[in-house]
Image (cartoon, rainbow, N blue to C red):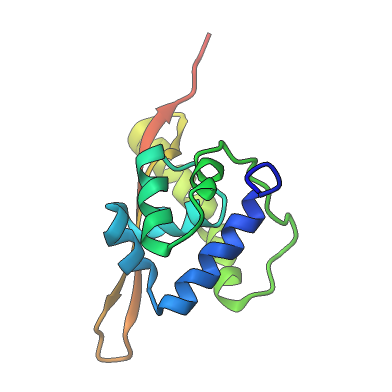
Length: 150
């Protein structure tokens, strides 16, 4: 079956096993020793898993061992280039649209001409209590990469 198994098949198996087991992404991440954001991203096919993490995930969710090999493959990252319609995802799109130029300007002021890496990158989502209603705190940390100049 491994030859016929696709990344989409493995993602569907992960989602089904997660639901059947009543697990959270945080719980799965704890079992494999990774962050919840990275675990979800890799499970959705946006990152390759190191072999040992793929083995732990397959074991934790009771998936066929063949799925581990699929999880270690380097993915082709493709997503819709249209404006997202999901309200939560749209807000992130809106945030980047509104604040992206400001973030870029501030990064350039503080570091020079370059970018924040999305490869050497950490992302955390936290719940913060607030008197006006709980807040979502999203914290990103990426390595600065300067542009080469000739």
